[in-house]
Amino acid sequence: MEHLAARMARLGTETAFDMLAKAKALEAQGREILHFEIGEPDFDTPQNIKEAAMKALRDGYTHYCPAPGIPELREAIAAHISRTRNIPVDPEEVVVTPGAKPIMFFTILALVNEGDEVIYPNPGFPIYESMINFVGGKPVPIPLLEKHNFSFDLNRFADSLSDKTKLIILNSPNNPTGGIIPPEDIRKVAELIRGKPIFVLSDEIYQGMQYSGTPLSIASLPEMKAQTIILDGFSKLYAMTGWRLGYGIMDKALAPHITKLIVNSNSCTATFIQKAGVEALTGPQEASQEMVRIFQRRRDLIVNGLNAINGVRCAMPQGAFYAFPNVESFGKKSEFIANYLLEKAGIACLSGTAFGKYGEGFLRFSYANSEENIQKGLERLEKALATL
Image (cartoon, rainbow, N blue to C red; front, side, top):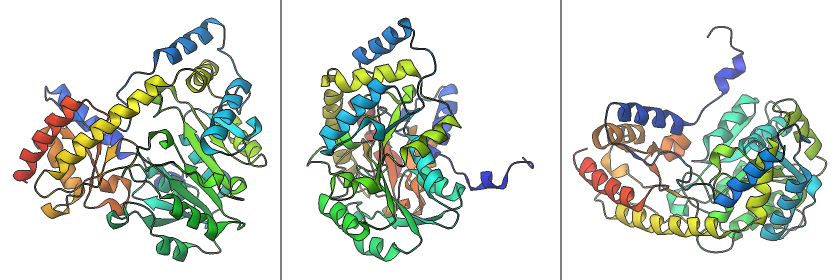
């Protein structure tokens, strides 16, 4: 379209939705497609959360509310983060948004000037790089390499810091690799930037889905809370992707500016959905805990199955619900293999390059699918790769 603003050419997208559209088109032709492309839990939202939303609707929570969120939810989030990250959080440091993506968008929009450098993980969630480019910042990727268990190369990180570095994005557990940043590495990152005019956007959306060890938020380290914006939400742990409910935890001085962006974009987050969020955090947790246990079983099934396929190797992910197998031995580009698997075997997965150039040689499988479908997918995958 000839009349679009030039900045639109710098805006990326999520390949997962493109692959989903291709898969749905094949299903419409009568093909059976096994879906491993979309990063959302296949579980239903827990019943108590749905009941809370319906009660809120009946009680008239259908109107505008304060832009940063209703007081009850901000208080519940503050208590939740205080407990899970072991830091004191005031409700005034909480900003609620329709989904967690706006915290990425608004943080980068509010903090990054044209020419400022932003360090981010690659492969990583594609919206990071998209938004850095959109605002005219300079993306500085840190490769997440298999040999480092998909954590930061700290030497590369230290060398990437400059007087133009304005923001660092951390994501642990990571999408797409399922890797975590070890606590000792997070401490070293903090040592390198503590007290400098550099903010950290800590994407902790999968924090409740770490299968071993104790998650460490950089915000909990000495003097780092004021430099950190924690991103979290309800989509993953509570299977609420379609509800669009997320939040950021940030310094009180920054919160009004992020709130101003909310006022100028979506006004506020749906009130009845926020009431459901209160129930999610303060109500029974058994359903989400059981979901994580099932994901761990599925993880073991798919990773062991991938490693049993000739030419494939896959590191054991420590969190989230993604497997990131290495398929370099087949001598084809990752995107070619992903499209081949869809057409040949009815397997919808993503190329590692959907998450950045350092994802070449890998595929991403979301194991948010039944054990039966995972087993069927592994059988199809082995047959298809044998004829690649």
